[in-house]
Image (cartoon, rainbow, N blue to C red; front, side):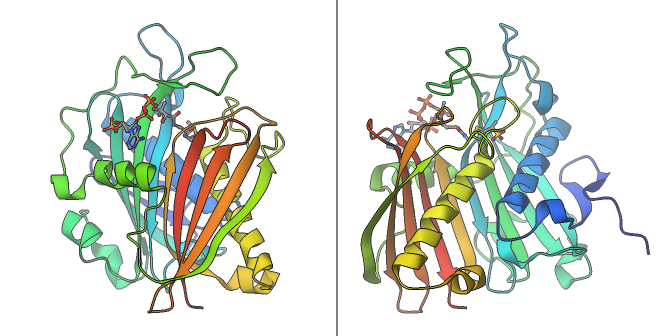
Length: 310
Ligand code: YXS
């Protein structure tokens, strides 16, 4: 059987279904797989919402970007972001949901192509949110259409919408599944975690300078997947501060990761990374990483990871 090309879409209506062979460009201990999910999100919105997310323009003709605002990856110790390698075959179901003219939620259900979960032809919200399978990876991508308010600056992005973006026909989810309450709470509490567990590290502060050779996307914004890499840098530094070595880090299994994007910055900007760790009674370690602009303390991102006991 010849491997299908990565991302072979064979159903273009909702849910969009694609069969994927994992390639070197989308696996490893990095944010490449997250970036691939970002592309699947843009393809799904383009397929279902009447607009070309890769060439979207607002009513003034300015480019408008389907920016990630909230990203949640939910897995298990057997199915998590670090689990994939060359040649793995995945069945991906993707569907978008109506959240108005300026934003859209897309759900992805990622299963092994030869596994028992691959037969599904629909995304079941109850399975997705209440009864997740341990052989599937579930991703919520909440995107906002944005445009620059100042040319060539990544600060002060503003909400926007493409002239041909259609959303009214999209299905809606019950309010209990809405991401809004989740990210509102995270913005305010500066964590997605609902507390509990013993404090292992109350505060581990480092800085990071946005690197123009690796952190920017094709329009000069700090790429959404680069925020995952920056969070990983904060976690890796925390691991080292705890006396854990690189192999300890490479063995960690992130079974749940949430990230809320509050702002973007220009290359060369120095970021304050603040990590905090608690350990729950079940052994899961919960790590918060806050990304703020150094000097202004402008909040840029809030992330919370649940690290399964390896
Ligand atoms: O409208 P909803 O209900 O969603 O709620 C609003 C506010 O009410 C709420 N909010 C708060 N909630 C709790 N506590 C607060 N203190 C608080 N303040 C506000 O949050 C929702 C958004 O409010 P706000 O103020 O952020 O809106 P805004 O219009 O000022 O700004 C929206 C954005 C999206 C322009 C801004 O949040 C932003 O720039 N976020 C960063 C987007 C970003 O850089 N994403 C990643 C990289 S860019 C990207 O994804 C590329 C396209 S790519 O894919 O290539 O990487």
